[in-house]
Image 1: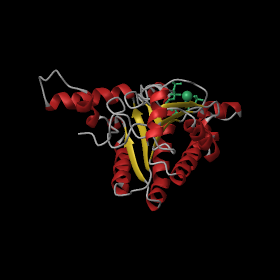
Image 2: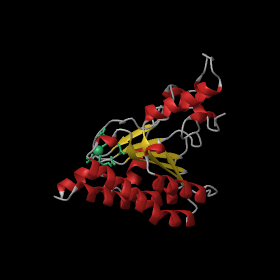
Image 3: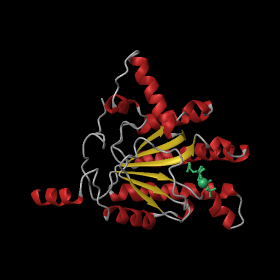
Image 4: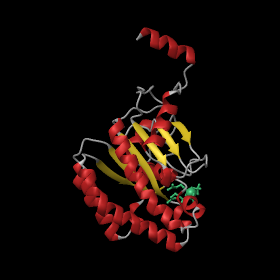
Length: 253
Ligand code: IPE
Ligand code: IPE
Ligand code: MG
């Protein structure tokens, strides 16, 4: 059973501050190239932007922050960039987890983790276990994550439990998705100027508000987040209904 209602089954409650923000942190490479620096410098700077964003979300009362750190397609990059990204992940976990824990942040890492080495998997496990009881902001890192992978792994788990059944519905599948512990994202942000989903949370983004900015991820900060939230606050989230229905509902409440 899923603990969070599905946006296609019931109209979710909409709050002024988005409960869940999901971000494609893009543009690290271009940020560096523009400055005649190696791409990896952009990734290193990207970690600072992650820290700023986590802090800003915690301060603003966002409940869930989900960050796309490495996609299932990013293995296609040059081997030295992939291994630098892995090392960066290890150092960031090493440096940041204690501080996150002290600030009541719960850390989750989702994706096909079996492709990572034992050391990294062990660190992920420890970090998740250590922060599991925290009740502040939940930060989810999507690592070797793909939206299609997520749907397929959920489907495989479901079918394994009830072999032969052919009438599954959305509610049957949802609890097996890797982010079943979180409500669907209210706000999706992509930095770096591209306007695409790149196989991020395909299922969960069904009714998310989309926000794209040209600025590169290493430049993202609290004021950039505020701009995105302000844009979100100006949207009318209809979930299939008409604008007139929303006006009526407001009058009635
Ligand atoms: C995002 O920045 C970080 C990862 C995908 C790991 P990019 O590395 O994609 O930066 P650009 O898009 O090449 O500028
Ligand atoms: C998406 O960025 C993945 C992450 C930010 C981790 P990419 O830079 O890999 O996306 P594409 O390849 O431009 O679509
Ligand atoms: Mg990119």
